[in-house]
Length: 192
Image (tube, rainbow, N blue to C red; front, side, top):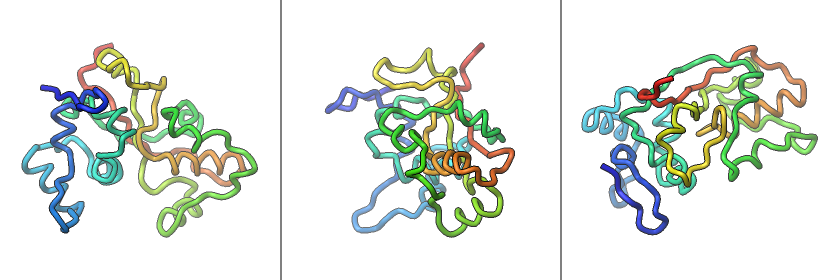
């Protein structure tokens, strides 16, 4: 069953509503409690913890995320952790509102911006600490609402700063790992 969001006519799936972090007045919900609730109450065991922690938990109410991804039936979504080359990652696009973070990469952007463990990972391993989430757009084209912007062949869902750091490292000829972990998100109902 689907709901129509009143103010902008967006399709909001039941599963997107299920994944909403519960808010309690004056008590911020810890991720560990959110994760336990999502697993016990709704059974979304197929969504990796890192995907929930870096994307859905903090960005669930973000208008760009709602417009771009709330229509998806997350009961039918799969996630595979894969290793991609830099060349493969250059085929990943972002929705227009985020393209400014990724293009152009030039001399204005001289440094990788990361802190703590993320910075150490870039310095020592030439890659990100937590894999970004990449939508396999081809598997969603038949079920996607017309108002949704889909970038082919792959769309960066979450991890724009990490992708920017990779592009800066490449541009600045800094050491990069040969392979980079990503979560590829796909429609499990898609038939080739």
